[in-house]
Length: 340
Image 1 (cartoon, rainbow, N blue to C red):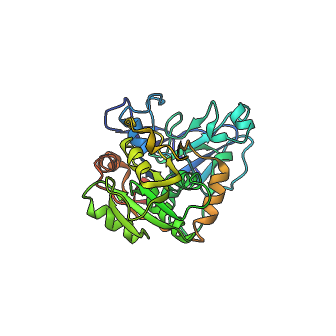
Image 2 (cartoon, rainbow, N blue to C red):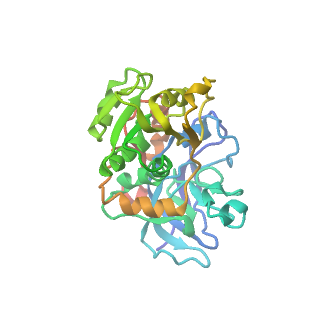
Image 3 (cartoon, one colour):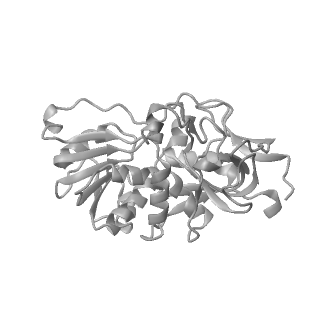
């Protein structure tokens, strides 16, 4: 296969500016890396946090995108986990040092020196991308490229958030019903739980979307649920929802924050936390999470609802995500000039 010298990409030059179209060199895979021909890449709230300057240490200029579905086009020295042409997925966690205390404890998601896809290294809003093959995943064949992309962050980190709620959860609240929530709700229903969906006040479209994806109840995030919850998951980056969720969980219940960035949490009376309620965050993912979730998703089966955009339309996708105008997940589908 003859590879092109250059490729189309959407670049972030500086935070708080739109991505710009660019023609840049096709990257060369290094040791233990694979060069992927990108087929699709999901658009995530984390991308928004990078563009909006809320995550402050990106590589610049930067190709964002960390929910990459691609086929192996070439391999670097020492690589061979995947064959040429095989379809693989690339998540947010691009690599770890493998030697820090967190990695030694088996908590690679908390690595002291992680590399994040589409943040420290270029991601998938381009025609090609390189990735550490050790941190890539084979993808279930039952999903199209666009359907598979949200599984790689909304799915993986949503799954970790869900598992962090602990055992004995029968009534589960989900605050912020977007890409991650519509996947997690399907898993929760598959495992016999009742799901209570909380959306922006008055957002009837999002509430209907939640009910279509298995929620037993859907209402405003400021409203109490019909029953006290065993646990609540928060996917919206709104600190005030931590307080609302604490009001909604029973004694001994858990509130799990699944995002990488959140606005400040307002002060609240100790009585909301008392009686052994738990508030915790989720950071990144592990490869074990990926293996478990991608084996489970086809069994449920998890169905992802996506709105697709062309590569040149990434800014439109980000704007619609920022303003809450999307239901489900946004996915950029990459079409090269040779395929048109």
